[in-house]
Length: 114
Image 1: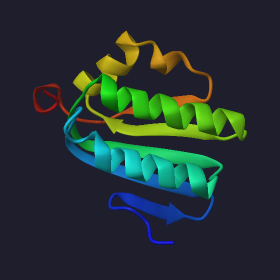
Image 2: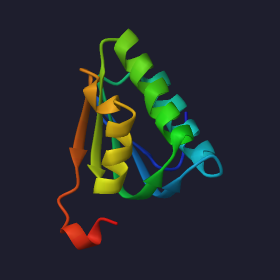
Image 3: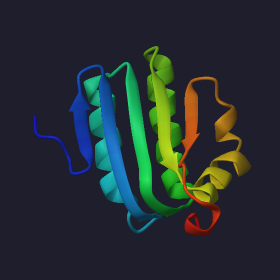
Image 4: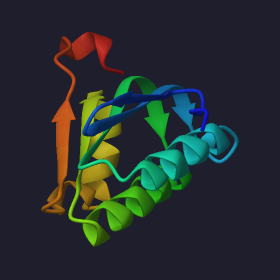
């Protein structure tokens, strides 16, 4: 089975790497990686948002879909490298309160995060 673009397998951890803006027009590639990660049944799926400047409800919906899947199978989701503006979107939707989702913001100077 070939992996979709942006997906990497690291043993028990599946990594989905995203770049640019994640919105209704670009979410299809993200969807393919999420569906692949769900099929692989990793203990942990990490979503690397280091290169993401914006995420809308379609992107958050895919994170929620992955989170539901991981929850059903006893797994976790780690969202890593989120810029402040992207992390704020997660907080506004209360996704940062899920006990099986870890939101790790990027370590960037204030002026580089927007």
